[in-house]
Length: 470
Image (cartoon, rainbow, N blue to C red):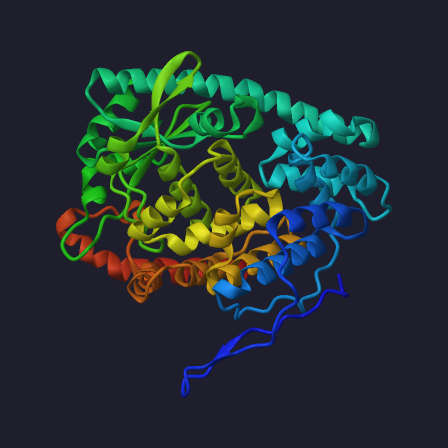
């Protein structure tokens, strides 16, 4: 939207301590923003809509903060295929999205094959199909609609099978006194979507107490699951989990393959490149029950769920729309969250900035949260706003691409809350991992040798990658 006014960033003089800025136009209320946005939908592309919202929010919050990041001059290209996918997810919640879908379907530059590929690549086929089926099935080519319908039904069947597997595992864990919290997959679909068919998941992610990890692994093997990598069986699982002299744990989770189901069992959410302080015992103490096929299973509390989703998405630089959608649905499911308490816990866990990034992405793409207090949290951190912009730029230029290892590594460092955490994230690349253990299994006393094995492995991988692209 080229006609938008530009509001220059306020600048604070280090010498005088005074704050100089141009007076912005009259502040716009949040309700006015929503009304204006709805009326502007017909003649603006989706990227311009975000610019309009953000500029209005800058006006609204100017008196309470310094806005150093000026994104108003950035020109966003139109991407009707991506916009169609995103608005399909929202189609059953916003009438303006329904109208916009009809307008987009008539555009000559809308590529229906790309629409299907974006939905599939970003793992949001179920909500996209349901949105299309509820609003404009007659406007979508039959072959595209048929492909989406087929994937939707296949996903629904697989989800119900995975629910049965999860319930059996939890029953066996409980009988052996193993505390376990399923925190994604089926439990997340039920807790925040209230519809198992609306979310894609292909595995079960379980958090267990560190002291129960060996027993959990033994239980899974008795149930017919096998180690995902045969090298994992060469030593008792607590070896790589505990680490060795001068070496932190090589892994914090184990993966098991059941043929039609994959189970990941971890004992912490912390990663060397993505620090987070949410100990299992605290998560267990605050856990709640979620009904799954008539059985009550433990799940994360609403606040912990938000933090875990924000952390998980940031770990992968929000490379899939599914993760942003998960976070937005988690916010929408808990309409009256105490946001000051959410920020306080995020700050204590060391992921306050990652929470703000998650809020910014869900607000821009999926119009959630609605409450002004939550929207203000999303824009109160300049670096978070800048990182949100980088992620959105990637989606609009290449919605079918991954950010790459280097970009993810840089994002890990920039999205931390403190210099200490940034240093931890920056040095995470040098720390030995399970990949080195699998390549060269060593006894724990020799784990320091992995500091030599890791650079050699990374160098070999780089040489192989370079030769393949010649």
